[in-house]
Image (cartoon, rainbow, N blue to C red; front, side):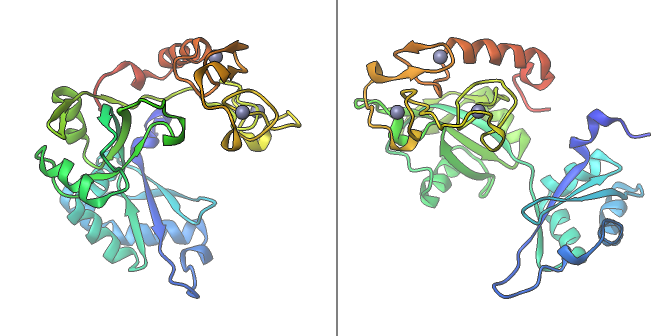
Length: 277
Ligand SMILES: [Zn+2]
Ligand SMILES: [Zn+2]
Ligand SMILES: [Zn+2]
């Protein structure tokens, strides 16, 4: 009997690259056929672990990706973390598909704005300057859209997505160096969700299921899209959650956000630990 709480640890995500005008072959297969296909490709993984590894279920995502549940979390980790194993699995599986490595998100605090997350060179420099293997930083993005910065802001929090949990834990412990500065890192925790239409926090609904008729602005609370908000000073911001001026509904310093965050932290065990398991 497989424990339910371990399901996530036993999952791998397979994506199919379909050339323009090509046919998505995975889309034509039934779950049973998909499982059989994965089982044929798992021979090398079984061999390495000296244990028979099997796929249990195959679930198709809306974007065409397939989430496989394996019967052994060790096998899922091995495929996601070891490039050689991943390549061998994929070569047996399908030349058109790829396994997404599991990503470990880390917040880097107060990164100078001269850093360009979309620049490949900046990412590679960050890896090189910190003894991180090439490609272990999958990508990076600012935690907040640059448009929401204060006029005199010089640094901002950055999210980097790492493929190696040991590297993620090392920089959480030791920090990371960029632009001659030592920057502190922490694990990105699960945060309460906010509806992007009404901006209420912790309701459990998303914009597509929002019961409100009119879209509200997450910055000033008026009836327009957040993107087109004319407000550009702190005083003009209005939070629809706590009905207060001076901060926006998307502000992580909002008292309601903090309360919901703490509530979530006590429910999600992973939020209580500083490092990745
Ligand atoms: Zn809503
Ligand atoms: Zn607005
Ligand atoms: Zn608020």
